[in-house]
Image (cartoon, rainbow, N blue to C red):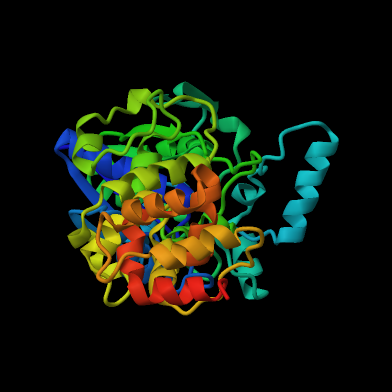
Length: 443
């Protein structure tokens, strides 16, 4: 059975790049009738935070992404220790004692000679006595994985054929001197143990993949997973996205009022040969295909996301949003304003326009229209036909039409140059508030 995983490190909140990886894995699993695992790669105890872990879970739930299994690397320490001992016994995991300054000096010397800055495996030449002496002097070893000779090759489901010479890559450190296992190691052990069949992640992991393929063969006899690396999303100016760009974090988009359905619909098609469309998750699953993704980095287009957001908002029924509208807002209010919203948070502004005691903008030169409007305002209660009846009467009294008629009335009643149809807003503002707002400009 197809099985994929999304394996975030809880060292920050999710941004749209993380969300895209999670979404693509989710859609692929559901399309294939497989399983989706949420695994928290939480071995970074220095930067990891419980609030980040909960934030990741909350954001995924908000997007409508569900999973079939969960796992945490912090609960698998004994398994990593077991595999590490097996690798040591096989001669594939060896102790090193060089400090960072010594390693930096080696790299600099190689670069100066125009050679790849690859670790020289000097630690492998140490005798047992030399190792014992180093430890007796207070040095604690960290452990590197001895890569195989030859190449690591795979047919990437997005990027195509990939072939990396392992001799151009340093033997990776798998275990720190304090005994903490690193991502490269734990991820491979987990993928093998948990039966992952496809690894779908960002293109920044391509170099890791070569190492992890070699390590996978060393720790498991299970079939090697298939790999798919998505080109990384760039920002509006072409910069890479990161957890530190708060303007495109899921939390900021959520706070701004962007609908989760708009985000999933946008990210599901970002970087593919299909245009983004306001589709439900069921249709995104049915149409999903990894072959649709291109090899060029796609750009995050906020305008396109907002366009989708408007389309979703304008189609939402009152029952779907009433819990997020201002207290007291009814269906008539929602139907009056929804066609004018970019984001749901703007509903608060229109609630204040309808019910608040705001100070309208200064209006000059429209006294005749406002005088006539005050004199011809229909009696209470105002209904759906009141706006047409009223403006017809004002036109008859003044001859004003078009912008000369509608613009001053909108400014007086809403304080805005544009907005929802006044035919829907006027009954909500009501007779008394309409009269009071007109009297501020009519002596």
